[in-house]
Each structure stands twice: as structure tokens, then as C-alpha cells.
Length: 230
Image (cartoon, rainbow, N blue to C red; front, side, top):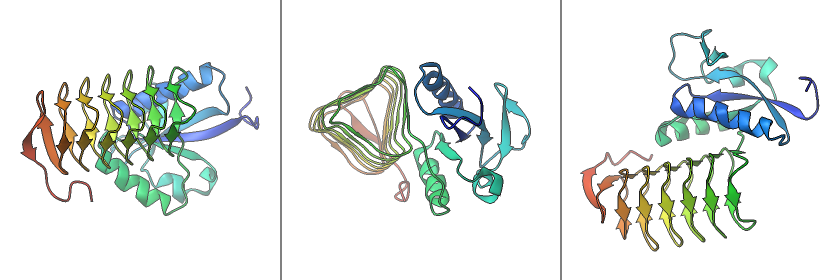
């Protein structure tokens, strides 16, 4: 498809780590499935990089994240913020949003999304994700492969749901929280803002803000800085 086709739009990925590279694959899956619009990846941006001008998987690293706002030639380009750390993701998104940058949500073609589920702006959802009826996914949430979010569950802005995790119904995952791989947040449970659920943990009640929990049932194993989610 020609680059100047009205069905093709331009995008950059902010972040050169694992999530950034996974986001590149997600875009490719979107395009390969013939989904519209087709996205042309211009390159990566990153807040911390000394090798600007190098390439990752054949895609150039263009420069710092503010390049998208500073260069007039990039007007109208959408962004994907694919920073692994939810707090860093929030910081960059908030800064660029004040400059009018538009963020793109990308869902893998295999995502099973109820027609009554809600997905916010700037989200990334990978293969095998299942979203139940009236699940509410906030802005800039990352849901990794084969994870599920049950009916009526709320996942707040900037949270991350790890591969194979199960967020059951009537659950709240707080802002900028991380739910580890293959963990479970049982029905009626809650993960506080800025908290981290260890891989394989089972949360059966309310985990407070700014803690790390582990085990089955999950227990607090570490107190995180109080400003972890600010």
C-alpha cells in the first residue's frame, strides 16, 4: 500500500525495551490482518538512549521522546507509549499530552472483547487477551498475552496486567499497578494504586496502595515509597 494512501497513518513508539519491541510486533500483526487504518512505523523514540540513529530490528531510533512535539514535520503522527515501568509511562504520557500528542490503542486481532467492554486511549493488548462484559480498561493500560479481565472488573489508568494473569470479575486494579505473570486477583479483590503483585500470587482481598505482595494467598512483603504513584 502506498505511503500516501488515506488508509495509512504514521506512528512512533516511545520506548526501546521489551515492551517497545513487542509493540512493534503488535503493529505488524494489526497490519498483517488487514485491519484499518494501516500503521506505518516511523521509528522509536526514547527518554534514555545514547545511540540515536541506530536501529532496532531494522527500525531507526529517531531521538528523545519530545521529538514528536518539537519537529513540525511530525505533526499528526500518533504515538504509542511502550515504557515497561507504569510510573515512567504515566510521566511521559502526561508531559506529551499537554503538548497535544495523540496516543494510539492497538489490540491484537485475536483479542476477545465483549461488545460491552470499554477500552481507553493508548492501550496495548496482546494475543489471547479476553475482556469480559462491562470490563472497564482505563487509559494507557498494557494487557499482556493470554491474560483475562473478568466481567465488571476495573483496571485503572497506566496499570499493567502480566502474561497469563487472571483478573476476575468485580475486581479493581489501581492506577499504575502491576499484576505479575500467571497471578490471580480473585473476585472481590483489589490491588492498590502503585502496587505490585508478584508472579504467581493470588490476591483474595484488598492489597493497599504502594506495596509488593506475593504468595497464595498474597501477603505484603515490601512497602514501596509513598510517592510511587504520584
